[in-house]
Image (tube, rainbow, N blue to C red; front, side, top):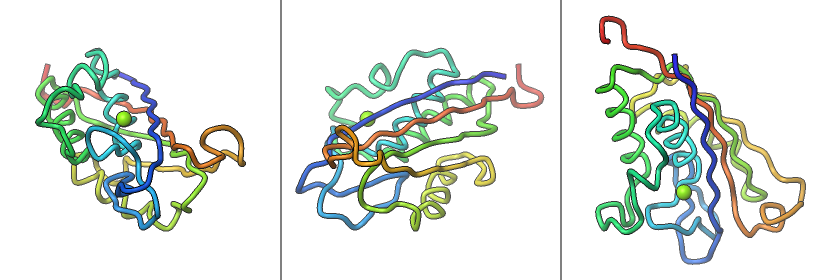
Length: 160
Ligand code: MG
């Protein structure tokens, strides 16, 4: 078994789509970044890369690489999951937290779980929690959003 932890944050800005957990959420601002800046997918990707012992997301998806400019983070997540499968591991569990003041994300959690499962994680192995920051700090004042993830990888039976 391997365990990994991931964290990410992005600035909220006008003129960008808000994409979290692979779901486009109607809002007047979106997260700023090289890819679609999907803060939840990035935290999950870092948790998986961490469990594999392979550094971090910036090493594998550098923001200098045009390939990932405007990329769907679900595609980046799929790439990392396929990589872990090639190394003989499957994602057995992920637990996550998204911290954002607005908009309210709870109506989108089931859609996010479905989207993330399309990248190669069983839907019953995906837990998503959403929180506000109680009005405190850069998240509380709407300047940005953050996410945390933890994942459990286990050996695929028959692979060594
Ligand atoms: Mg990021």
